[in-house]
Amino acid sequence: MTSALRDPVDIPRPGEFPRQFVPAQIDLGDWAQIEPLFDALAARGLDSAEALEHWLLDLSELGACLSEERARRHIASTCFTDDAEAEARHMHFVTEIVPRIKPRVDALHRRYLASPWRGHLDRQRLLVHDRDVENAVALYREENVPLQTEEQRLENEHYKVTGAQTVEFRGAIQTMPQMMRHLEETDALTRREAWVAMTQRRLQDAETLSTLFDQMLTLRHQMALNAGFENFRDYQHRRLGRFDYTPADCEAFHAAVETTCVPLARELAAQRQHLLGLEALRPWDLAVDPLGRPPLRPFATAEELVTGCRRVFRQVSPMLAEDFDVLTSRRLLDLESRPAKAPGGYQSTLDEVRLPFIFMNAAGTNRDVFTLLHEGGHAFHALASRHEPLLAYRDAPLEFCEVASMGMEMMALDGLGEFYTEADAARARRRHLESVIKLFPWIAQIDAFQHWLYTHAGHTRGAREEVWLGLEDRLGIPLDWSGHEVWKAISWQSQLHLFQAPFYYIEYGIAQIGALQLWLNHRRDAPGAIAKYREALALGGSRPLPRLFATAGLRFDFSAETMRPLIEAVREELERLPD
Image (tube, rainbow, N blue to C red):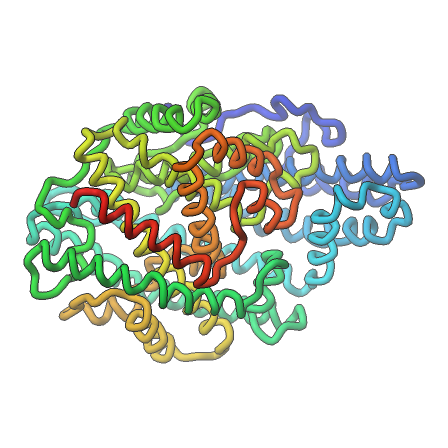
């Protein structure tokens, strides 16, 4: 079911989609073999609309082959952070191949935009594609290529540092995901000892991570200046293709969360404190069951997790279970937590074979169930759009990609009985809905923090800590951090996205608004909601973001007006569910 091999992906290429342009026998890690393909595209005559369209498809195929080569090497390096060969192969592609690809792609983009035959192609069909190509050309700067390569090196270093973080706890060496289990224990001493052990281990790397982050900030600011922007925030918004909302809209989202969601989050925290009989909540009191029941333990092995999730997917839609079978039968899962494995979870699409791969760190917790449901939603998205010929259209904007995954979590709530008794399933539903309410303020806090970080170049670490603590006061819940103030001031370091994907976080907030709408639609008309969900997934990225939301039956808006009734629906459901 899962792979313990050093090559976690053993799917042969090209698979179901034969190559038409890229040679069958080629080393895609050798620039001497790749370069002639770019030369051929640059030299090919484009004397008709048909010739230009065929050229676009060949460029798309080459992009898919190279993207998959990079993905496979990245997957191997995250599955085995102690494998020097895997790291070397990944970094070779990042430092030796990618910098050579970027100027060649830019030149081909410019050739496409300049072609007189472009106007003879289907303009409506290529609307999003051409908008993205024009944006990429406008932002491209040759001097940024080495900076982006160095940024990737620093990001890889972050993975190595965090992947090596283990804790010796009560006689056993455990990873950080495995340690999270202990925060659910009813024994307060166990929780406290586990949290303190994790925090002390993180503090050992705090200086290293702060130095890495400072270097990232400097690099990113310089990229923005090179591209003609005053700051990295505005540059990155353009780079991420945010055509349908602005930084000001993000700030409005922060304010909407503060007025609609933070009050409920603080009410829930007060309820938790009361039920636990505490004078104040401590950081290690947030995952334990407030009524003293033992932790939810939905599975013991990765195989049990896979089997249970398949049954949940089947309850939502038999077609989703069939899609999930593609992953299990083709060994496209690496789920167990183990030493020398990067933290977190992700779904990565192998763009040539057009198949998704899921990576995560399962440790037997309720959270793990939702992680696989979440990444499963991403995988269904990849499978739904895999027959799209253009690579650019097989990926949707991140804001809608996360609707696919977060919406799946919400629609799967009624199927949790596949893992639990009905009483425990109700607990799990309550826990997830409460996590949604907690997530909105955290998203707003992380995004607002990034807005400040990247519009205040040259700030000091002290100023950074002060801003973080101020946002904690504005958007967080009351917690007693006595004795752990040092970690509180730098607790942002636990958020992987700040290092690995700057400004990729508010997408979760926008998507959660869509997911809550999908949940309510599903409760009213399950078949209709699923049909619209799958229809929207099949569009990939071929439509603008508001159109994707509309196809799924959702409103693309993240104002207080839209959020308020959704938060109230969650409140009502929480009041209905037993504690």
